[in-house]
Amino acid sequence: MQKEEIIKAVQDVFIDVLEDDDIVLNYNTTADDIEDWDSLNNILLIVEIEKKFKLKFKLEEIHSFKNVGEMCDYIFNKVN
Amino acid sequence: MRIKQGDKFNEIFLVSESVYNGFISIFDDKNPLHTNREFAIEKGFRGVVTHGNILNGFLSYFIGERLPLKNVIIHKQEIKYHRPVYINDKLSFYAEVMNVFDEVNVIEIKFYFVNQGLSKVASGKFQIGVI
Image (cartoon, rainbow over all chains, first blue to last red; front, top):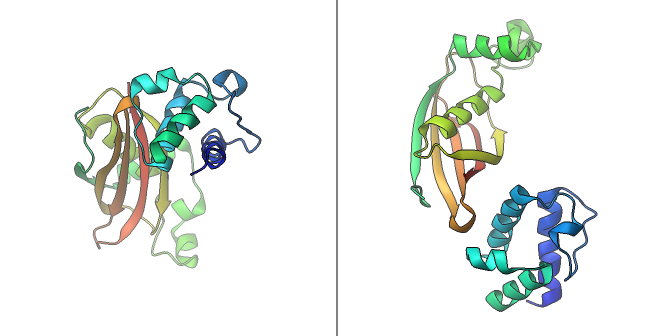
């Protein structure tokens, strides 16, 4: 799976969970850039991303991601 | 977490007159399908159809009182209604833990309700967070 496919799939999760068709993610996107990306939605996003990519994050990994790009890099390394 | 994937639960719920009347008195939904027998029969049902959201009340009871965890909040839930439920129907409720997301303390559970004639009347799933 290519990195572009991963960020598109993650973007689809964001659109579905946050119910906002206008969300466009890039590697530098953070929670500060998306209004509804709050703590509860962060949990819902993690759950749906784990289901989508059939992987499990560790808590320290979740906390270590500084932006969408770092999370997508992690997913890329896990799924390939 | 004290709940793990594959754990199963079941309950019996009676859609009694008092549950039905209580729902109407609280929420004031007196739609003729729920309150007018002739209207309901004309629409193809065998009597007044009870409110679908009564089943969500049973779900609330199950989540809040019957799960072996009290520190939970509902994140989301969905339900499909397959068949009508009538007053005094006795419903068997079955639930199974689909997923446990330990790192974010989230549990996903699927469920269904079956009436006394063994017909599935509703099914769905919900997601709860352990706080």
